[in-house]
Length: 453
Ligand SMILES: [Zn+2]
Image (cartoon, rainbow, N blue to C red; front, side):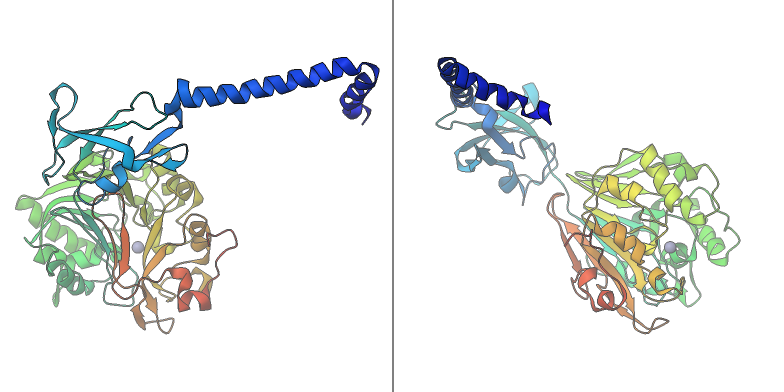
């Protein structure tokens, strides 16, 4: 205690003993502080005024042209004030030495452009200039389907530019009719060809609709596939739906389709459409056996402009840990909720890295198909607790009406769409209500106090 007070005591003692020296000391301190403030003022206003200037979007590599360019490309601040209208923009076609001035970016064709920004603000003695490559980004929609029965299962239809992608086709063989009708609707698979079919793992609720049955023609009966990207390992080969899937798959391969197993294409990046890529993420269960079939799930990351969308099938905790270890995962705007919102997936090892903005869960909320304990029916309380820390924007396809086989739409078919890979919208065919605001949630779940309000 004595030591703490000693400086103050010394100063007081000195002031009493030698008042003149004390006054000098105070003046010196004031002078130094004044010089510091003045120096900072001179530096920021005259020597290097640009340090106070920031250009939002100026360091974005790839931004969408048509809807978002103007709004995002020229937002500039100077000392916290919006000076966007003082920014001068010059457009060039091409980059580097080859750039040719153009009046504006008007094309819909994929091209690289250079945009030079400059600002001549009253306080800025030199103009600032940055170069941004602007790439056209195709629109994309991701649709989490309802499957026409009370059974939980996955089927995600993605339209990326003109390219059609399907991830899984559950939940039962008879879901094939519901899925096929959706895929045949206007604006969906118009040419009868699914360019990429991702089959995440060999469970009925992901595979059965591909095969269908005698009264419900399968997805593979109604559509041709360009490339199959399929789980590498399984202990489930003897199931009827698997055998039928393999038969129909092989018929398509004989007719020219490509078949790739996850372990063969792990790390590959497919150029899907302008500004859109699909990466097959790596994880160890493409090569190593697991006691849980779910861990064999093929995982994919789509990038559209500056947005990222993650799909992990029914990957469990060990798989999620491997996914984080073997890939550099980005922040994602969208994650398909792991394993229908199971407590064994959606672990913080993954969530803390990707910090999803939107989570879409494919399940029949609250029905007892897989779990009888109320808190463990999909989507589980434990998974909600973990996701809630990062987002409240959780959407669910279907909900039970009686806890067993009765069902109705919750959000319905959930459509996540982005015109140019930065802004996005989420809509349900039934409604847009987020999970925490639904009646089912109020009666069956609680929002954790750590959750985002
Ligand atoms: Zn599943």
